Length: 489
Image (cartoon, rainbow, N blue to C red):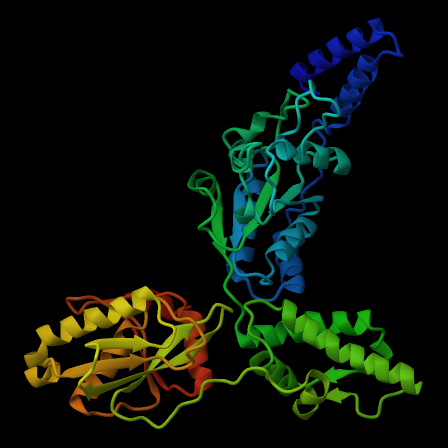
């Protein structure tokens, strides 16, 4: 115990000696002393500083995620040289199902540390983190101190799940309580309201997880090192399914002795035509669904072996029904039709056809349909102004823009909302193609934001968009020059 805590404990013990054991205050003082003694003062688990073993453990349990693994290895390498180094606060940001919580637990396992998982979803009372003051009846320490007591170590890995889903209420703001906990300059003397003594959290490795950055208060985000988790690409999902998901589901359903085999073609078919997700949770459910049906067949028919133990592409509809999604395919091009690239909410990419026609006697000068958001609509207005300004350089005529003509742009699959500026040059190319009556190649796609002066600005989601274009059969992608930095990745 540090000297401050020892003095408080001694004073409380002297006070306890003077009390009558039947007094209600006696039990309050006794509970406080028990809690103070249960805190693992100066007890630390020994870290495994073997970098090769750390890399091997992380690679065995998780496919990909190289950026995250490298950052953890860097921290451990630095700590092995300086054991008193303050632990960083890591924030894992990414779509659901991409392995944020899983790799946080894997890090603790690789380091040989104990883990405390605290879910912050819908947490609205700061006292749950920092405890209640002893003046309240039934007061208890917060989740942080309670976790340290349970595992008996002062240097665990504490995983704070869903930090973007904190809620402030009349009771206070939990995000404000986290400011002290997640600040390496302050948490060496963290004071829980119940204990009211300084507890050193500087050796604790805090890892927070979130789906989006927007709802995390800036002051809280500033204290953390953000590491982004991208959505998994199709070939990554395939490898994860083969290495982790299928063996796990076969074991869970008791099918180990039946030698069930999933072909790569079948898995690719499930990933592409039955799912739209950034992670692999739904993929595991689909594999589990197939395993359950096989288990049902074995039990009902009392089989000892299965003749056809290979799940191929032709077997998938039997187990999962008709496919739910269809990949966007290349179409025969006409003047006014262009391939753009889209990043979908599910975390995958696809091609987006843009269609433009010019007609007379329009009730509206310019029209953009297909569940278009305000930013995309503004892009059309910017493009028309840019084309009119540079008509001579681009070989256009003033007659193209006369009042009796109207331009109607449309993005097919109108049930899917579309938003963002990255379709700017695709829409521009489609309008130009329509006005000049020229047809573009069908194996070319465009992506990039266009400005009123004709500058092309970089866009995001290039990794996913590129893979979506490749699947659709695109051979050439026209990119903003500002995205050169993304080409290597």
